Structures are given as structure tokens and as C-alpha cells.
Length: 126
Image 1 (cartoon, rainbow, N blue to C red):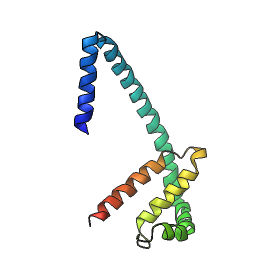
Image 2 (tube, rainbow, N blue to C red; image 1 turned 180 degrees about the vertical axis):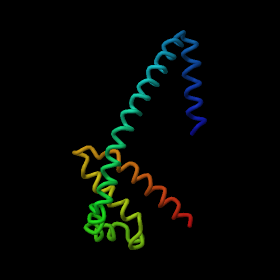
Image 3 (cartoon, helix red, strand yellow; image 1 turned 90 degrees about the vertical axis):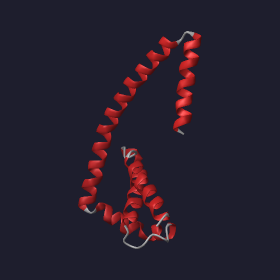
Image 4 (spheres, rainbow, N blue to C red; image 1 turned 30 degrees about the vertical axis):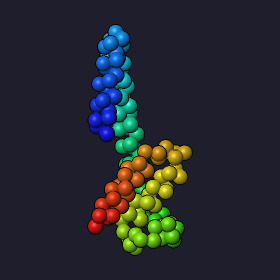
């Protein structure tokens, strides 16, 4: 995949050089990098807020209550996950956060989903 991206970037630069539009490509790259940095700074603040709220909910026991409430549903969907495994908590948090998109918890499920993908990927080879 890295070779594909490298080829596409190189082909774009060579094409721009042959057409005489290299300054426009350079300006677009600089503008895009500025936008990317601004987006990263904004997303860091939003992620910090909602991850902090999820940690507070976890410490308060709200997440454990939701896990208990979702336990029959999770056992039906994922029968091979052992009882009391941390993956059940991650899955329940993902369900809760996805239902809370209205209040802005749409970044937290991504992190929990990545943890789950890593967990199941590693368990497949054990």
C-alpha cells in the first residue's frame, strides 16, 4: 500500500511539473497541511473532553451498570467471548457511545472499536 501511495504522489508531482502547475501543487500541499494541523488540534480538544467524561462514567459505575444491562444481548451476539472479559465492557461502551451521538460522543466509539479489532485479531492467532 505504501508503494501505491508513493507512486500516486510521485506521478502527481511529475504530471504537475510537465504541465507547469507545480507552484499550484505546492501551494495546495501547504494549505492542506495547515488545515490538517488545525483539524488535529480541534479533534484533540473534543476527544479529551469526551474521553474524560467516559472515564468519569466508568469510575461512577455507570458503564458497569450498562454492561450488566447489555449482558444478555452481548452473550447472544458474541457467544465465544468468556464471561467477565474486558471485551464485553468495550463492546458495551461502544453501544452506549454510538447511541449518544446526539450529544457528541461520536469519537469515543472509534477508539473502543480499534481496541476490539486489535483484541480479536490477536486472539485469532492464539
